[in-house]
Structure formats: C-alpha cells, structure tokens
Image (cartoon, rainbow, N blue to C red):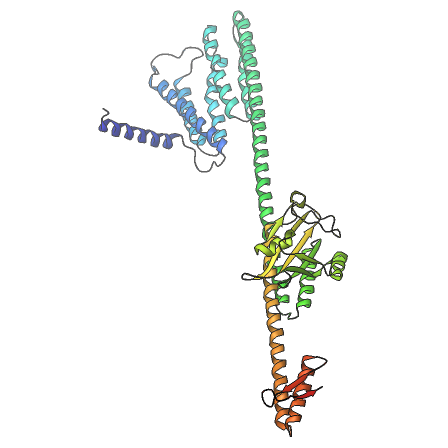
Amino acid sequence: MDDPKNKTFMGTIKQLAKRLEKLLFEPTASITDEQDRVRAYVSSILLFVVTLVFIFGLSRYDYGTPVAPGAPSWWTLFVSLLVTVGAYVLSRTKYYQWGLGLSFVPTVIILYGVVFDPPSQFSDVETLMRWVIVPLLVGGILLPTRALLVVSLVFIIEPILLIFVLPPEMTSDAISLAAFIIFAAILIALSSRFQARLQTQALAVLQAKNLAEKEGIIQQLQKAEALQQQRARIIEDSYEINSKLATILEPQKLVNEAVNLIQSLLNYNYVQFYLMDESEKTLALAGGTGQAGQELFSRGHTVAVEKGLVGQAATTNAPVLVSDVSEMDTWVANPLLPNTQSELAVPISVGDVVLGVLDVQEDRKDAFSEEDMALLQSVATAAALSLQNARLYALAQQSAKYEAVLNQINQQVVAAPNMERVLQVAAQTLGSSLNVRRATVQLSRRPGNGRFQEKN
C-alpha cells in the first residue's frame, strides 16, 4: 500500500519545484504573445545553465598555474559570467532577444582569444571551434533572421582569421575547419529560414481560420440582426393593421381595409378574406386583391367547408401552411391564380366560433415562415374582434331602431281619438318600419263573432 506520508512529501516537492520553476524561468507579464513567451522561457533556461557552467569553471580554475595558449583566463570567465547573468535577466523580459544576443559575447571573447593567442596544437582549436555550432543552433531557433546572420558572420570570421595566424603546418586544417563552420552556418541559416516560412504558413492558415470563424460569427450576427429587424417589422406592421381594423364597424369596409393593408405592408402576391355562412356551411369571398380578387368577388365565389386549405382552416380552427402546394393532394387550384406555389390560411375566430378565413398565396415555394403565420394570426384576431364588434353594433342599432318605432307608435296611440285610429296608426307605422308592402291588423270582438280589419 502507498504511504500517505510519502504522497504528501512528493506533493510538497512538486509544489516547490513548480514554484522554483516559476521563480527562475517564467517570463514577466510584459510578454503577451504566446510564441514570444515560449522563446523567452527557453532562453532563460539556456542562459541559466550557461551561468552555472561559468560558475563551475571559475570554482575549478587553478589560479596558480599559467594559462595555456588559447585557453581562457580567469578574468575572461569572470566577465563572461557577468555578461551571461545580465543576459539571463533580460531573457525573462520582452527584451529576451537582446539578452540572447548578449549571451553570445562570452563565446566570441573566448573564440577570438584563440586568434590573439593561438595554441600550438590544432586539436585545441578544433575542440573549441566545434562548440560554435551550439550558439548557431540556438540562434537559429530563437533569434530573428537578421540577428542570426550577424551572429553567423561574427563566428565565421574567426576561423578565417585562424588561417592567417596559425603556423603553416596547421593551415590546411584551419581551412577545413573554416569551411565546416561556414557550411554549418549556411545550413542552420537555411533551416531557420525554412522554419520561419513554416511558421508564416502556419500563421497564415491560423489567420485564415480565424478570419473564416470571424466571418461566420459576423454572418450569424447579421442573420440575428436581420431576424430581429424582421420581427420588429412584423410587430410594427401588426400594430398598424390591428389599430386601423379596431376602429372599423362596417364588415365590408373592414374586409377591404384588411386585405389592402396586408397587401401594401407585406407585399404578398395575393390576399383574400372569406366570411362564414353558417346557414349554407360555406365560406363566401368577401374581398380579394388584384384582378383575380375583383373577378372572384363579382362571381360570388364560395368555398365549401372542409374543402381546400381555406375549408381546412375553418374546420380545424387552426392555421394551415403549405410550402409547396404541388406536394399536397387535397389542394384545390384556382384557375385565376395558376402560379401559386405556397399558401397560408389562418382562421378568423373568436374562441371556438369561426367567423371566416384569411388566406394569402405566393408564386414561390417556401415563401411563408413562422413569423408570417404569427403576423396573420394577430391580424385575424383583430379582424375577428372587429367583425364581432361590427355585428354587435348592427344589432344595437337595430334594437335602438325598434325601440324608436315602439315609442313612436305608443305616442300616436295615446293621441288617437278612437280605436279605429289606433289600429290605423299601428298598421301604418309597422308597415313603414318593417319596409313591407302590406300590413294588416285584425281584431276579434268575441270568439267566433266576426273580425274588424284595417288595411294599409
């Protein structure tokens, strides 16, 4: 079994390691780009290691022994240590590239020390020069192209100078070493350029992807804005239509105003308004737009309940939307509207009582949406309330008219001198009020004993 104390100890070590890593290598907040933060992080690790190398070199240095030709002196190592520490400090900031360039100074000092104090054996020079590959590789990975070219030139010049300062017997080896350094620098520079191109291509792909995502988001926002504007327009149009219909108390004027408003505001291809005839169980066309609507109205066009979309809407008391009428077997075509491809029928009802149907048609498929249905339902509700109000208003007017007639008859009857005049006034007033050609009042004196009749 695992020891809980061991787990706790290891967890503490990991936490300390993370804190130490953050303290020594994490870049400052001044570096915001993620790639730059990675480069700065790697640079700080490398320079920290180089600093430790110089410290180790100084600690192991034999200060009592004379320095061999080409070997670095203690003061060279000490200056290199100070420069590397400064470079390490810069590597954790946004100036990390300057710190990385500064870190090459100790290498240059040590290498050029060979030029001014060449060794007697070429193996010492060769060993030292092979370490040039390390800073070139680091520069190729972490430095910009121009900075790498400068560093490469500084390192390439040194082996070329060695050709002229080394003894003649070492010239051929110096030429080979110079060629090797030049070839390595060119290869690293080309690799760095290739890597930069790959990064540029990857960045271009990422930017293209981000641009596509951004365009997609913009399109979604535009669609959402268009939908919001469409809904706002629907609410505005619905309010305008409903407010105008609410003030109309004449059924025929209500029908004409409804179809004209819907046509002008929503620009449907065809709009028609049916009223229910309960006695015959049919829907009579009360109004329609365009030449087709006028002709159908003049013919007294009717639709049987349960026939076609209009009849279905009246029967079910629910909207009926067909995006493609050619796919509906029960659809009834109108010869005056041969190009209809989509249709929307909405019942005009108050509760369960259907008063009519509002129907719109278009010459293209999928012309109507849920917003169109919602708008027409709102208009149909307003039309139903207006129709109900109009009928109640007509009944109220008729009731008032009858009351006026009764009051008139009552006044004349009270003023009549005899029964004969009373009957005559009643027959005349009722005949004119009811608009009939003949009115008769019959009065029975006794059961089975003749009749008194007054005619008008």
